[in-house]
Length: 123
Image 1 (cartoon, rainbow, N blue to C red):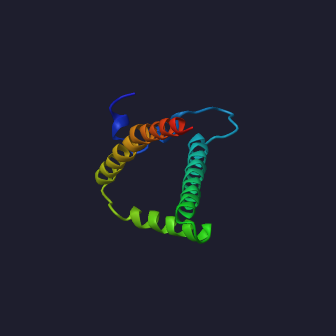
Image 2 (image 1 turned 60 degrees about the vertical axis):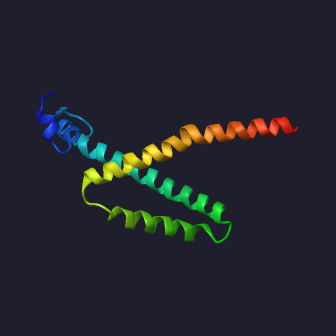
Image 3 (image 1 turned 30 degrees about the horizontal axis):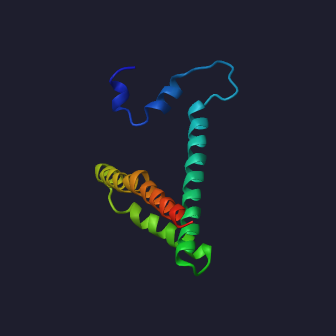
């Protein structure tokens, strides 16, 4: 592959279009690939909204889960209008990844280990 791949918007789909399989069951492999991608993104987003609603309900301790799911969906929809510039969105994702990644990879295990040491000493 050449540098032309870097200039294409969807290089994988265009490469799938260039593959010609005579007598194939599915002539448009790119459509098959896009349908799998759409289904997988939908399942990931719906699972994220569902588990976020479950978490918010458990944290708040009141109300019903559909109310929290609606709140999460509205919040995600509002955040999608935050920036139309892709570089700002990537910077926001990178910053949140550093913050939450540090919390989940370093601080949370250290806190859980400290709690387990404290609990074992009290028994």
